Length: 311
Image 1 (cartoon, rainbow, N blue to C red):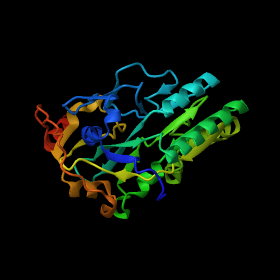
Image 2: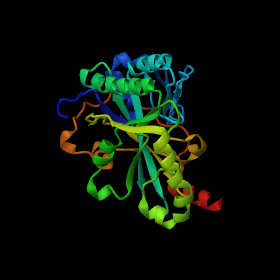
Image 3: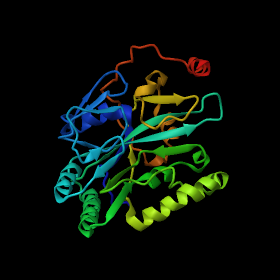
């Protein structure tokens, strides 16, 4: 792990302008709005590959037919599709993982987005991408239905301190490559306490589904062996998406735009929030790029609660 690329960066989504200032080769791939809202990050899919369903990102051109951003899924059915996959994974790759923290209070919890940037030109990263592509090619030649889940979710969860593990979760740290379909998340759930509570559903639906899928489809997980290196602008702001009633889908903010709350976040506070080892963080000089303050009036936490209760 120590030999992994220092270019595998992880940073708050609001630090993207700061990162682009230091990475001129990426600047032509993004156009940023000053107002932090869904769609404020406009990207050029011809320059950069965004493997995320997060609605903070918006493509300026139509995406490749093989990629479904809503499902975070590549559908590969032919050698031509495989060629398109190689091209997409040869560009700078952007993930957007959502950190969800649950609270035992009037506010049920909040989401915070972090960008993970991979440089496929670095030898260590290129080897892993090639491994994924070779595996897809192998399964495609076999003629069997397959679904490969590629992720670094374990690294995100492993970076969370023990005292936070019971109420901190990471989402959208994966993508799928398949010639059929991805597994049904509900029927594939492995929480035995849940299935004990709804045992008839397990017997009549989940168990037959698992048997049929295992018999007909080759499922495999590939963990990206990367070292997440946290970086951020010292003047960064953190966008927290609070939810009060039902748990929203991570990264789907278009229907919940009024629940955004912006606040200042010091470097120390950010370290505690992400739960990374502070000794491994590299300090940066003050960022010359300042995000303009959001002009619309911020909604207080109590107002959010009252509105949700009123519904």
